[in-house]
Length: 628
Image (tube, rainbow, N blue to C red; front, side, top):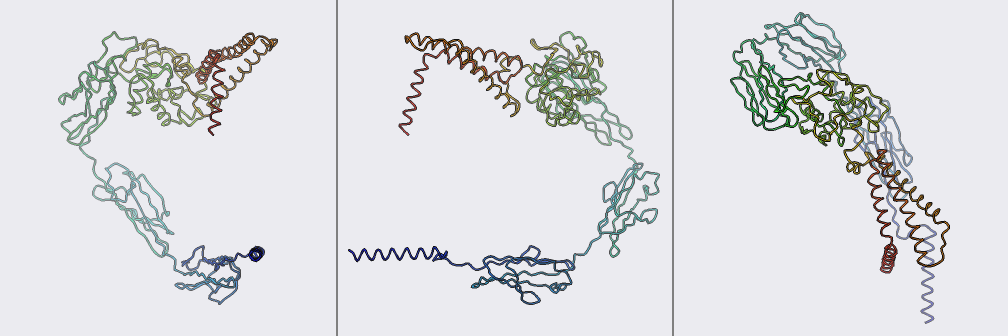
């Protein structure tokens, strides 16, 4: 046993000695040294590198795990550092090869045991030849260009890698700049071609060695003796659904044209077209806005236009839109309202076109919304808009696109770049400017639209009683009467922007941005904290002298009174806060305050079950802890 023990001790001592030797030597027993890594580049490339004759070049090298390096060059072998760079190597340097020749740089590095090499080759090449170009155009075309006699024309020219240019024209040869333009060349100009003699302009550009040439030909033809027809009838019309309508297409045609044939595209239900009278007539049975293609054909050609026909719902009034030489007709089954215009109408009859502000969620005038939707659909070509008298999300989207389309007039005066979707001062003013030619009222850029307490009156929006041919109180929708609208709709809204239609709408109003959301959460938290502190203070003040000793029933009564004093105070405060939020128009606080009020009342009414609830929660916690 002692011998075995001695052998174990000896083995342990040997192992400890070996480990200590390796540790202090710092060299693992199984370490294998890697060979050096070498890299040489010319112009930051591993090569081969092409250098244009006359240009200098540079080189650099690096190595890893090496102790010494040598560079092999056309001049022999020389020792260098383990990493570095050199250059530029100019054409006069002995390492610079001749044109078409090359030089190879080789780097050898060693760690005393192993060696590694890398090389890069540099070629000297001739520069690419310089190409001179010249280009001349007439009316933006390389030609031949044909113009109608009496029309003027222009020409432009460009060149590259040239030092001078000359232009050959009917007047001779003249020096010109390397690029430029001229014109218009009118019929009285000496370069103007005749029907039998075209004009040729030739551009010659040179760099002193090579020359580039380009030319363009301009022909002239006599004007046509058979001009195309032109549709002249109005391209907008309106009518009320289930009311008679008539529209006649008219067009001008002169010269060799003897007969004009009219045709139309698809028509709304209830309307038909007569080729003999060129009239669209009938009784439309479907409300909406329809784009009807009109075509006039003669022996000389055709003209095509689009008629925008607005068929208003029956509830929005009457009025038929006449077109061309035979328009007119239509109307309503009820007596005309004050200011109503029947038959053929023009936009100027309804200026100002819009007279009140609108936005989604507000108590908008349906007739004003119909006008807005008709404008967006017919004039701005937002075909996805439905004319229904409701300021819906689709209408808001179209308004936002309109604001971006005319942002310089609508958004920039407010100092903003994002659309709001509100038909407010500048948006309403721009619509009236487009239709009526009126100016856009000025605004104060430092105001933010959504924070304006009350909308500016109609006078500030650029409207005065008696403007146009109708007054504000009797301005009809195009082709309709000025009814006061459905019951419950306010015709004159002092502040149509900031009051929801009802309490339900107010309850579900949310902040418009992340900043407003944080602000509303802060206000809500502040209200709850203040009310909780107030409840505790009132509880302490009212029951400060109450004893904590005595009969259990008495103590329970005192505790119940203290509880009710605290929480009924909080409930009353929440009710007051709810009313205050509504009065101050903090709509986004209404729903959270209402939820808090309901929860507080429920907490008060279930007080008798609080102890049981606490016991159940405590029991659940204990069971959970035991399971874990």
